[in-house]
Image (cartoon, rainbow over all chains, first blue to last red; front, side, top):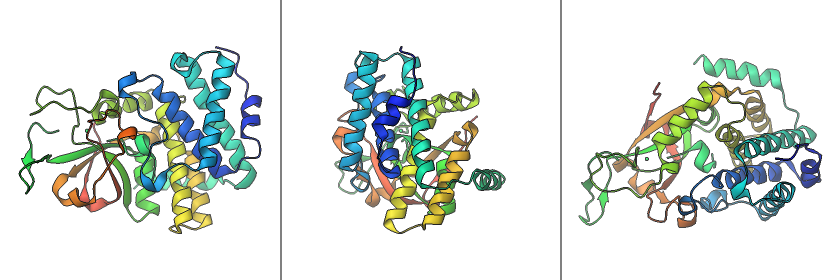
Length: 121
Length: 186
């Protein structure tokens, strides 16, 4: 596994809106997960319920993400080691968080307070 | 919440009943593995309606099934529940299931916002909750859904999206809370 930095992934997400970033990262994780599944049991990672089919922009971005990962690793995602897979999933979450920060004011205190209230229900 | 195999992972009792046609056997119940956080968001913000992927086989490999199940282990609610439970119990911060669920809940909030179900403020509130959520908030819950009352609401998962072409996998887009039981197995 290569030393993972995230600048290249930020470049892949450059100029992308938050919703597309979230959607693309979701499908990218789904595709990466499929790599560990026997071929006969794999799902087509973009196939989804009619009301939640991925947007064309998200599909393109997902393909770019997967291509960028396979280019860096020089292996098919089917051969991606488990530790690399987990690291890329973490990176994707990190980059989506950065994209989110550019457009949405997340309120961590509010999030924590609400979580505490819900946990107590 | 349109998070397919993460928000609503779905699995048979050892016997079947028959629907009115007498041709296709129908199960007693459907099963889905959810996360506490996804369930809670649906309860608090989406009127208690749940987006659920489910299957009639809780444990497809069980020796007690009346007929073989085509649901592969990867879509087994039992297997998903067990592995998620282990990851959450271990506090695995790099769990792919947890990551996928985080993204799925965010995506669900975007879908609900576009549909006009929630305001910008509420969407941002949900995003803040997901951002602040800890691994323990993704602990698994098992949905047990009696089949007959929801039979008319079932949509078959497109073949390409199933883990096996013959696997029985269904989607319930707006499953009301009153239509299912929730179990937490430790």
